[in-house]
Length: 434
Image (tube, rainbow, N blue to C red; front, side):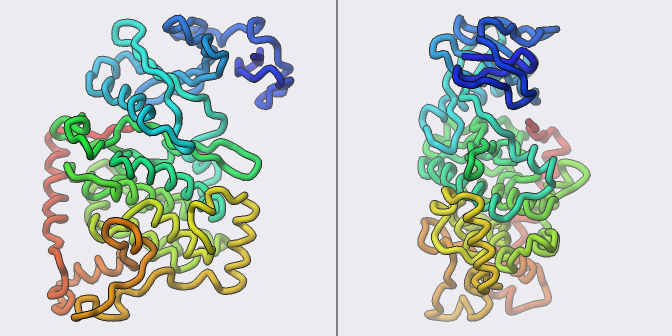
């Protein structure tokens, strides 16, 4: 193994120069670790195994280092909990759960967590595969939006990883751009989903209940309405909502629900619908109107009317752009091929104005009426709806007696839920930002 004397990064033996600063690489043993300063880990060997070389990142929960695994001569990322966080037993258990889930769910699109260790009083580490690249959050900070072809490839890979987790009844609960890591490859991004420490394991509710009363896990900008209300019955559709919010942000440059404070964001999620993404995105992206239907379905307030799976959401995106195939195909396609396919579909008119059947074209409550076709109809769970925001608006129109008669559920539970959620905030609700 080799190392860079300038930035302290590690490289395989066949590397010659550091791509970060252009410096010539030297043998690992000849390059000291990053100067420690007041850091307790730099330059040390933790648990007689991990030689800590440099700081990679700092977060609210802990610090991430690049290290060498002396047993395997492999680069690893070490996440070490901050001391104040390590005093919280729930935080430590959530930290360990990330390792447990990784052991249960090895997957190409989920980061591989290799080890969990305690190395002193209130000192805990996770060892993970080292990833070269950046979080989706960093890409958004730099470029504001993501091109449709690149985003479709990213979302398709996220869907493949999450659908496997959901198949095992594991719900992520904290999906956000910070937890989607992009590893640069010649044909495009290789996606790794990070941080399964906040998961809900629906097959064993006892394992799932790591939160105390008045605590909501997740990032508020991407939180589903049922999660915002502290529901005990979260399923994969909570992750569908989060991924829909991420897609909206990547295309428009802004989150679909915003506010000046946590309670204001919650209230927006519970009571408002975002403007169509096609009206918020740059004109040069040439987003098809059908994409509005797809995101309306994904961001539906009620889980039972939301897109059933993340795979169905990814399929809906691709079909809106007029592409043949499914997200399993688009996840592997080179970016250049996806760009060409989208351009061809746009030129031929295949990127239609409507991606799914219009639920208002026929009376869905009439006897014998056929259910509207949708991208998720063949998948388990309720079929996603089209034009969800329009339907929500119709439900909210108290002057429309016909709609009120057809409405299967009142909006009262959501309004009451908003009041209850905001009251909970007043007596101690807090969010976990990390």
